[in-house]
Image (cartoon, rainbow, N blue to C red; front, side):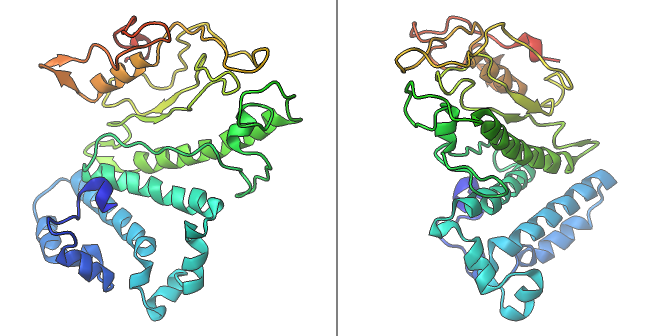
Length: 308
């Protein structure tokens, strides 16, 4: 977490606070005098709640983050035992633990990082070469293989697996639950007279629309939060009429691309929603190319259809 945010890293490596945390001290306790002085300042009830929300989230996260600092007497009532810590560790390597407990931890650290304003652009990427055989899902093929419909990590003409779309739906449902958890967490943190979600854009961006053809035609994208009122909310926007076909191209290999709205335009829109500027002016384009045939941006600008 320190390497991701730069919040707790000293010029010489570990700080005095790092050593004290390893000895069992709470990060909150380390700054208790300054924190109490700060909380005595005059502030609105909304600001006071924001401080309390931050402290509550930090206190919740430091229990599992530094379980080694707990002794048996005070750790056992919290469910932090040597056996529990060993079972929860992904070092084995247990994919289910890494995805479920590890994923939930990263979601909460994302919210904490946003509250600290330590990073204004955060990406959580889940690997695709994973077999969902955990958390109530029992598959024998990797997500990547299932996305190709035939269980093969390559692009071949092998027949589809029976029930493959139901399996993909189970995986999508699992990811939807994680996305909803992040959105709910961010929505329940206040910033002034609104929620942190109101000031953010929490996006669920799949890697591909048709993995069996490796294209992004009709890519389903979900955005929660209006980025301070810049984006529409509560609507479904169809940006193009292209559809990703359900069949693989003859002989294997990748299929064609028929979409007319490049993904670059979404990135341009989000950059401007965050207030990014070049020489004081809004961003006009993103990247160096936006199609497979030309090393240039052929369709610059924003997605006006999703702007409020």
